[in-house]
Every structure is written in structure tokens, then in C-alpha cells.
Image 1 (cartoon, rainbow, N blue to C red):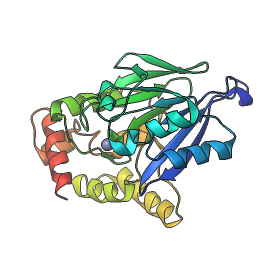
Image 2: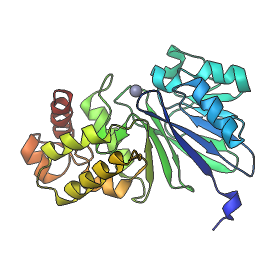
Image 3: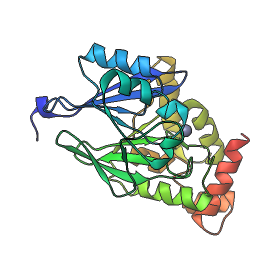
Length: 257
Ligand SMILES: [Zn+2]
């Protein structure tokens, strides 16, 4: 076990109307990364309150509530911006990364995983040593992102890569959408007792104003209908001869729910 003071620190805070901001800090090197940049001033203020100086931005995808603060944070801090090529639609990158690449924060390494589907170039950052994955708008607690750019086959392949991470991985998604997702999940998979217990906990947390994010992968594997599109019960209920067809049916139903 590393010494406690050598461990990666994370600061999570609400941003815009329903985004989560994340700052990752490595005390040994003093480096600090923004995971996406929904709002520059909020990030700069939160970093200052922690006594941290932002050195890196890691973008998951190009949407303005994820990369819109890049330029102002760069001007304020001179940080290095890393992300998928699609981010250059709205702001320059210092380094373009793709599936299989690694990025570093001090001695901590993050692996880049292709999770395209919400946008084509969407990536996640997985930190094996810390047991964390920053999944942006690909996977949400009990949900997944809208399929704005990709195809069901592509999106399902992305979800399979997330499903294959170690089961105790903590997933940090970018929005607090969980209660709305829970309503659809109960509609999609009404006979799942684990899901029912999870939904009660979610309602209790939200009633206290607590975040439902991050969430543990193993629990999502048992309850998130979009990660369970290969489950025989959901496949027979929602149709599809292969899981991505079931995923497509679930995604379309959620869009109209
Ligand atoms: Zn998005």
C-alpha cells in the first residue's frame, strides 16, 4: 500500500446545472488535472480553495459542457490540454490521444479507452492504480449518454470495454442524472430486486442532497439496463438477436421515455 500522503486525491463538485467537476491531484508531484471543463471560473475557484494549481486538462469529448472552459483555464494557468481529436472542433489541444494511449499525472498513469457512441471520439480515462475511471457521458449511474453521433454497435462495443474493467472500479460520470435514469431502469427491468434496492438508496441520497456519483462498476453491472443489454431476460423483453440490437431498443425507448 502506498503511504496515505502519496495517494491520489480527488475533489468533486457540482458545476453548471447538473454536471460534476473533478480535480485530480497528485501530492507527490504537485500536479493537478481537470477532468473536463464545464465552467472555467468554477474550476479555477475550486482549485484555489484546495490550494492546488491546475497543470493538466483531460477532456473526454468535445461537447461545450466538457471542453468549454479549456481556453480560459489554459490562459489562467498555462496547463497542458489532452483529449480526443474531436475537441479541436471547439478549442485547440496540446496532445491528441486515442484508445490505447496513456497519460500521466505525476507517477499515476491513466489509460485511454475508446467509449465512442455519445460522440464518435468520446474517450474515458482509466487509472488502474487508483481504481477509478472517468467516463464522461458514456455511462451514467443506471444509464448511458444519448447516442448523438455513433451507432448502436459502436456504443455497445464501448460499453463492453467498460464492463471489462475490474469489478471494483469506481466510475466517475459527468452528470447527476441518476433519479431520472432510475425511473427508466425500473421500467426496463421491473423484476430486478437489486435494482429496486439501489433505486431506494438513490432516492434517499438525493433527498439529502448527496451525490449518487461515483458508482461501483459491479453494482452497475447488476442494475444498469444499458450495461445489461446482453442479459437473456432483457434481450427477450426488449428484442434483438444480438446485444447491440437490444441496446438500440433500450436507447430508443429511453429517448422517448
Ligand atoms: Zn456530452
